[in-house]
Length: 102
Image (tube, rainbow, N blue to C red; front, top):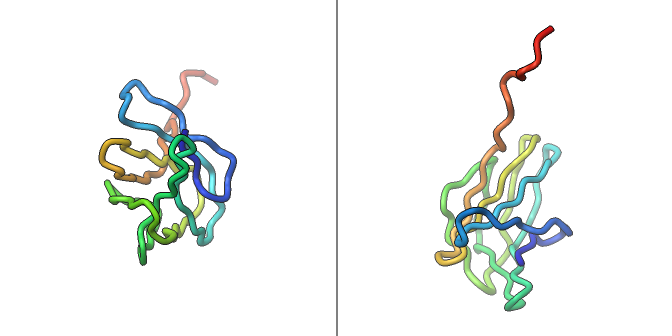
């Protein structure tokens, strides 16, 4: 199981057994983080790396330093590829409209 350092929010399994995801709301600000694999007790980070809102397939390394995440605020999806240790961060999708009618 994977967690983001400083939270108790676990990544969830997906239909793709190689990918886990976490959707979390962040206020505008700067956060430091690593990913923790509770099965191996390894911490994954990336030295001297700052992410502003999004990143695509950043390679995380065991025993590396913290990542810095600068959020403008909102809901974000963290996607981690287990076999490659690659992390992607996106703004989470939100519905532009609903099916209800006035």
